[in-house]
Length: 231
Length: 406
Image 1: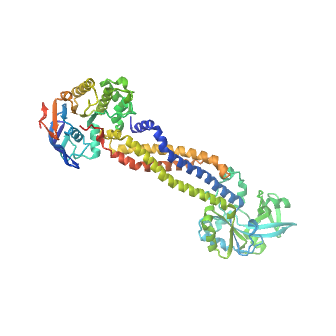
Image 2: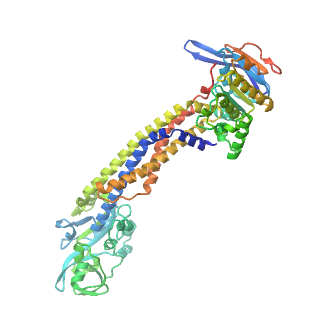
């Protein structure tokens, strides 16, 4: 088991009252799983993803990733944990516009102790993995949306994470590019044995997961479906 | 890829912002350096003027005539030699050099000569109190008056200054002013009879254009003996530090020696001293302005830059850059801004000083290397200060701003 949430709840104070963004969410994910999280807008999908990464504080409950207690860790420890164990893929790609493709991929290594050429070689290998080695010196605006997302995926892999958190990775892509990206994520999941948690509203994308979680108004709508997992 | 490179690449991306962010601090530094370059030269010029004129304070008996500063001690009444020790023991700040003198007109052959008794430098050893204070016979301190190099660079002959510090003077030795040496046909090593005693001419002094050219200097105590005025002096010359004079050294001296007349050449240099003081004040005002305006300007620039990069900083936080790394990035940028502002400001200010110095103060201004350090320290300090709050706020940017809320 790589990830376990226990009675995870997140409440927001709103002028109209308390909003239960997450309510007693418990599930487990095994190493190598490809988990898809679906649900309507406002169902708590992104809140769950942010909570798992320690980017927002939950109201109650526990999150354990690789034995690391996320909910009680300090900001600094969480940063270090994210740097070493988690890769992120976002809908908006979140590439730095003034860095080339290879510089964007190397970005998480900026504070690592690796040598300059080791960082470069690692980033280049990943650009090869996502099929963009010939675009390494291109700026994001010189790349297509699909290519930008591939660079973002390479960046998510550069620290050899055990878990990738993907938030609508195909949300800005047309259907054919979406399939390419989903296939790439699946390939990484299968070949690199990296666990992936992907938030999506696309039924097509949801089919790529071996474990499917559906949220409704902050609660698990159904027991996660898939092998080797339980609530 | 490392933090330094990331900061540098971001700099390159926002070159125009960089220039506007640097404008206030660079101009502020340039003004400070410009004013300081001129005022330093001006202060040196005042000090050199004082040196070339000799001692700048004279302590005379109350009844003395001070119409002519340089002949005020001639044939004047006398005061006790013990007054010198009274000045020394009062430990007044700014008294750099003391020289008691006994002066009388005497006849040598058919020539009227001004005979002046002085104490040579080696007399210091016999007066521990004076030696401890470092006053008698010492060269004027560098903090107050220029070094020999400075004198030479300003075109002044160091030889003129040497007359004030006589290393040794035997009881039968004398120093002869150039004019009287010419009249009496005396040269180095020659002999001269003064009041019935034979003296050896150890040196003929260089022409100064003052009454000193007509003087013969002998040992003070020998002069007291020959003139039959024991333990008395006509005047005490004091080399007072320029700034100390303006800070009330004269009134302090008057308190120590209330029954004397204390005069100064301050009037001659007062205008220049006033100008220097004004320039120093203006420098200080600009320093205060630059701390506020420069700091606010840098802070504003940094905050605008951080706001523009909120998503980027949020993403960095998300992928694992902790707050310290974010602070480091922002403060590194401020450091680079400070260094650039300091260097550019120094060169602009120096060029402005070199151009304006001769026109405004009539003085040639040269670059002052030490001001580079001062410029950098001020610029970097102000820049870091201005960036403190923005860097703190940058560390608080929500990392999840990049995530798509569904």
